[in-house]
Length: 124
Image 1 (cartoon, helix red, strand yellow):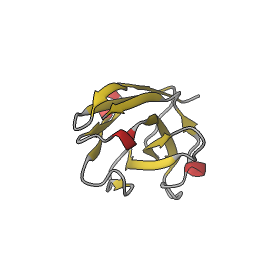
Image 2 (cartoon, one colour):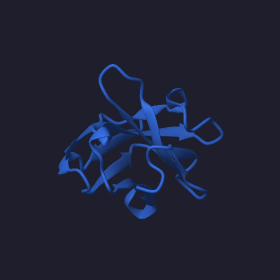
Image 3 (tube, one colour):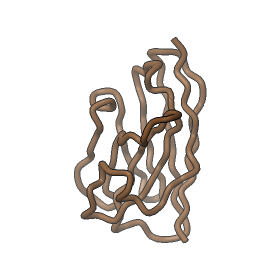
Image 4 (tube, one colour):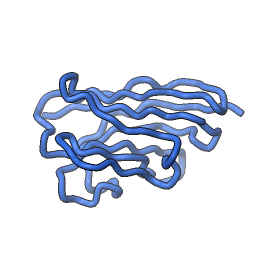
């Protein structure tokens, strides 16, 4: 069984930066796309960014474009989300997820594996 474990969340002031990590284990994810979603209470999970595990382009949600960067380190089986110029509205629980390539990667229902989430809080 595949497992995803996020880390790197925390409290940061507006304008600051955080780097989230997602460590993958338990199976090979070479045919998967890795995504980041976020969720606030009472709202659906929002697509943030995605990257194929093997090769290919990256994808970003509107809220992430120009500020966030998704990357991967295949040797470490880890996917990262570098978040810069953070805003209070970025406050959410951030989830790492894996979806088989070919599925609509901006949709949460495409993803088979999910991490437990990491809280990001941006103070004004």
